[in-house]
Image 1: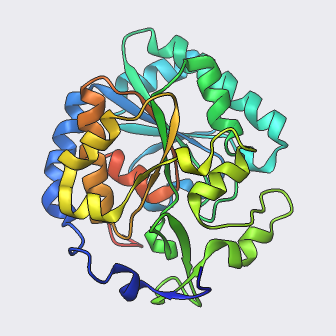
Image 2: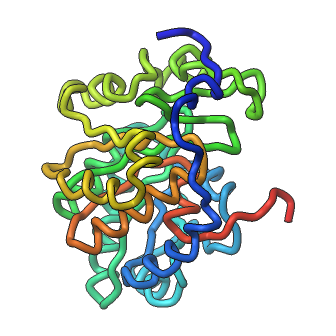
Length: 288
């Protein structure tokens, strides 16, 4: 793997990025039709940086969650700060939330979970996803979506990149060659996400068994192709979502919502960008 890549070169030969604004009305319609609220379990206070006009809870119980599921229009955040805790404590925090959500959801409103974490691959993964599933039951799969465009983080050809020297730079560095990968707790040796998944899961998921949702499928096939791929996922398998812009995520979300409408069940392990689109939050310029 080359140490540095140009974003323009990596995207050369692909169709242009889809237009998020053109797709957004469909996302709004499908999110409303789903009848399920997006619950974002955030392991760090920075998770709300890509959204606006949403509720964030720092404390809660079953009654608070039931009220939020009934009354919040599309999504809400639960701030756990679990990234700062040992893995055993982080897992227990997530198990407790799952138990509380199960009780709250039994009162009539469905939900889907985004386990929001760092866009440079640092966090208690897969422990937090496994903890949630241990209480909520199995899912067909979970999406891995670490892209965060405002921070210059892209996933292309199943490799996660960090723009350098600034978030706006065209020069991309594989994430494992950045200081983020040297984290004493959350370090990793590869930015190629199938291998990263095998490393992080200690072999539970082999790189060859990981599902890839690539940019060619997203940009050429559109939501129908995304839905078709997700409809074939089963057994809790991880799905790597490649994305180089919000238009890619808009297509993914439309396909995801279609697959979920057909009965597929997914959990999401994501950075901030995906949450905004899946939550049907309109884009807004920084500082406004």
